[in-house]
Length: 248
Ligand SMILES: Cc1cc2nc3c(=O)[nH]c(=O)nc-3n(C[C@H](O)[C@H](O)[C@H](O)COP(=O)(O)OP(=O)(O)OC[C@H]3O[C@@H](n4cnc5c(N)ncnc54)[C@H](O)[C@@H]3O)c2cc1C
Image 1 (cartoon, protein in one colour):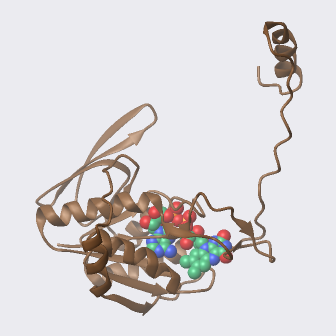
Image 2 (image 1 turned 30 degrees about the horizontal axis):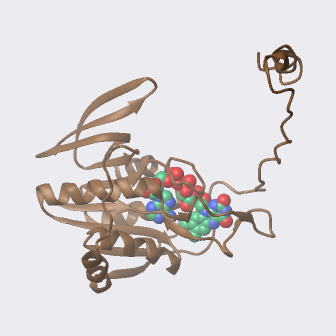
């Protein structure tokens, strides 16, 4: 079975992100980029599924040449080949999904794994949009996945519990933390990845329906107040929580 994993190349969450001079984009200078953390669960599940049922895992990332670093990491973990959908101008989530869907259709993939969310722009919709564009079934925020023949049983995290869903391929799954324990790339895997193919393709053109007007950082937090060091400070604390912070 042809399995696709879609991988987003995102700023490391430990990196201090600055907003660019145009006030609309992230300034990429001095930013360390990594595989989107949720996509690591997606990669792992794709590899486990391939190892159980046979077939191949193709990694697709849309962006610039820099995305190849994340594709290479997935190849080092064990994916078979990669595709970079080249695009260096702004695309909104639907435009990204359209380009991914066009390539997934071209690949004739039956099963597609996404992360549940990209930790840079955080929309959490590209997987579901792609499923709709392809006419595939989809299950989001998956924490347990089983494929038996064409039947899929997936568990989703819901508020205060879990939900079990049954569906069938062709299907898009979006991965949540806890789905598995992503493997580390071994030295052998890293060496093998150097010989694996990453194909460059032009991303399918697609219109943007949204426009970013501005991007801003949250206001700086005001410094805390120390009211006292023992129980005598409690009445004042309660008063301020009630009258100033208005949280009780
Ligand atoms: C070339 C380019 C330039 C951009 N420029 C800007 C900009 O200037 N300002 C701005 O605010 N935003 C920009 N974006 C971000 C864009 O608007 C989308 O928000 C973003 O690509 C997808 O993020 P999301 O939060 O919608 O993804 P989510 O819906 O949160 O992602 C869910 C999952 O979809 C998959 N996925 C998401 N993105 C990709 C990808 N690129 N390739 C493969 N799989 C993916 C991953 O599996 C991910 O876990 C740009 C994107 C691209 C590709």
